[in-house]
Length: 238
Image 1 (cartoon, helix red, strand yellow):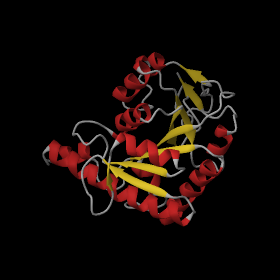
Image 2 (spheres, one colour; image 1 turned 135 degrees about the vertical axis):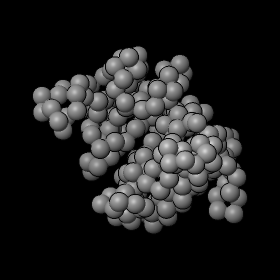
Image 3 (cartoon, one colour; image 1 turned 90 degrees about the horizontal axis):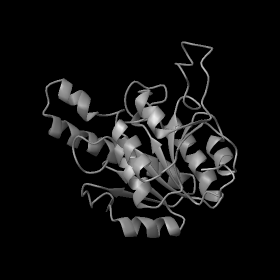
Image 4 (cartoon, rainbow, N blue to C red; image 1 turned 45 degrees about the vertical axis):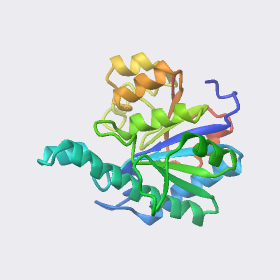
């Protein structure tokens, strides 16, 4: 996707760890408020936004399995952790003036809506931010894969993976100051180079459905707005 192509709808993927801030566990309200401010800027620019958030700041199914818990049980616990994060982010977004809906792939009707694709698209068309919780609703699938799936299902123009670095580098930029940032890289180069940008299943799904991915640093203020405005931000995977 060219940066000159107007972006009308995006899917933003956040890790659960993004909500940690300076904490070792849980949700830092200052961070959720800052993320909400970034999202509000996107909505104000007239761009529709869906969000998928992980649960690693609370529970990660794979990690729980390593400690002896049944993997399927652990993954279900991880899904519920993403619902908790989604509700926290919804609260922050609504305090920032963004009308928001949480839609879960597992039924928790007392606290949020069930995920229904057509209803999600209708929310987006009404300028509501939609947070997709509970991953795909199935064990053994990461929230990265869920983000790719939701991006394709809602017909997003672009999937954005928010990280702590401003793109994909030839090496770890913290350890190697000579590392070079890619402006653009192909799906296959990411997979073959084992660049650990996202789960491989997520990359393959985007590749097969021609869903472009942009890796950006959400900790840099205004990054999403610059991207929406057409600036060449981060690294494009396509």
